Image (cartoon, rainbow over all chains, first blue to last red; front, side, top):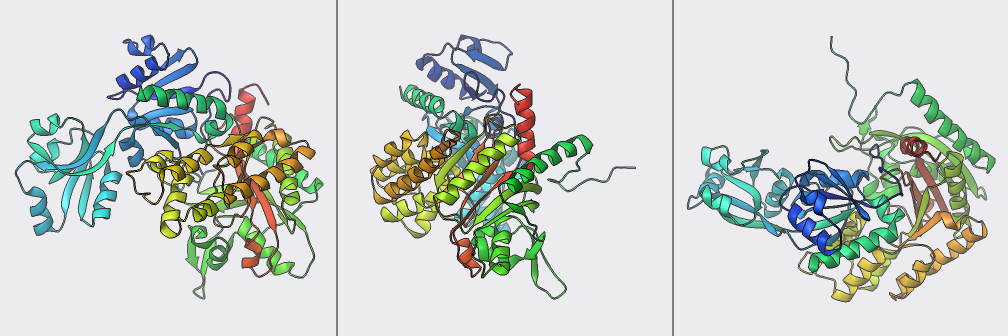
Amino acid sequence: MMMPGLRARGNEGALTLALPRGSLFGECLSMLDRAGFDTGEPRGDSRALIFALEGLTIVTVRPSDVPIYVESGAADLGITGKDVLSEQNDRDVYELVDLGFGRCRMALAARAGGADLERAERRLGLMRIATKYPRTANRWFERMGRQAEVIEVKGSVELAPLVGLADGIVDLVDTGRTLAENGLEIVDEIAVSTARLVANRVAHKLRATEVDEMVELLRESAAG
Amino acid sequence: MSTQPLPTGTRDVLAEEMRELRAIETSLLALFGARGYEEVATPTIEYQDAFARGAGPEGTATYRFLDESGSVLALRNDMTVPIARLVARRFAGAPGPFRLAYSGSVYRRVRPQRGQLREMRQIGVELIGAEAPAGTAELVELLVASLDAIGLQRAVIGLGDADLFPSLLGELGVNGPAADRILERLADHDLVAIEDEAGDLAELGEAERATIVALSNLRGGPEVLDRARALGGPAIERASATLAETLETLAAAGVADRVQVDFGLLRDLGYYTGAILEVYDPAVGEAIGGGGRYDDLLGRFGSPRPAAGFALYLERLHVAQAAEQELGRP
């Protein structure tokens, strides 16, 4: 049991949607445009974090913070990548819709042409893997029956195999350009990630009609 | 000199908070007493076997240790199993029904850096020897009165059915580990995984996926009963009929408007059968209480009787109460 977060206004006012500031942000706003919301303000260069649209309040947070805002009830709904939800799979949020956009792959990568991973596995019994997604990586290696020492880093994951911190990396790959520019290549695909719409469980119960209407609106606008 | 830290998930309570916590506890126990539910206490430690017998593998207590003879003891992680054990042991030949109340701490595991409580207080009742729907309705009515007594007039009770999804999956021919995987996803309310045909739930056809997702999202007033029935099948029909029956009894008691029918409700303890409950307050992001029927539990202790109960989570009630006061709606 957790000391619960307060839902900012209880049941009053518009629903609150947590949007991820980052690569999904643009597509989220385009989806809201298609749904008929005026996204001029969040689209601008304002430093504000809360935007009151007509019929929907938007809060902007880091993609990896979306689950905690929604779990605690600080936001009724949220959008973030499946990669974030898988890494934080102990967060108690309802995963309602695969919005389809923001498609990228979680992959195991290593130095191109090198046999770093095989060599490490054969001679040392395990691979050292740098990643921002330690739980996702550990789960996958466990499932594959392979031994890995997972090293958590907060950024510039591609650097780790180049300087000998790790034999390979597990990271999110969009176009693959960053990998290529650092002389890395994909060795294995772990999962495909897309943007997901999640809901707070109490909001899902107590504001059922509003939540269902918003979910349908966003589901249609994402597809459109 | 550095201060002495506390284990994560535990805390000291100082005077002002203690007064407010005690006030909630006192008004609930007074209400329970006035309705004929008498307070009892069970030990904080029991044999681990009691929890395993009552709640199965999911009931395994987190904190286990050995006594001087080598038996495995456990700090209780639940109040219902010990009270079922007490009734089976002490009142075996008595006719019942028994109306019992309790206020006690339970001990749960915590995940790091989540602000979860390792030690939390539950205040609740057990009605042992009264069948559905009358017994269930008596409890829901008492639950509504309890919420009113502590100023949570806006709180809502979700009412679901624990047997629905297991029997629906059986009907669809999904059993064993495949059914467990789906139930796990339903407990997480991960509807995307259930809709995903390329995922690991290959046992389900398109129509079955649609039925399960629709059912899982069905919540609201009595009108959702008809929407559920439209999805067809004996499991849904049976659950709808049970829920309708309970709702009628609640309507007669004048508390049906505080109840939300929720076909997607699942509880994570291993002993629930039939009606299950969860309590929500609009000011708080998580359930503030829960419960349901456990008609098989007493039988596991050798004294079969129909039974049901609910527990309110004291620390969360207090947060809800404070939030309602902040919102200007005590």
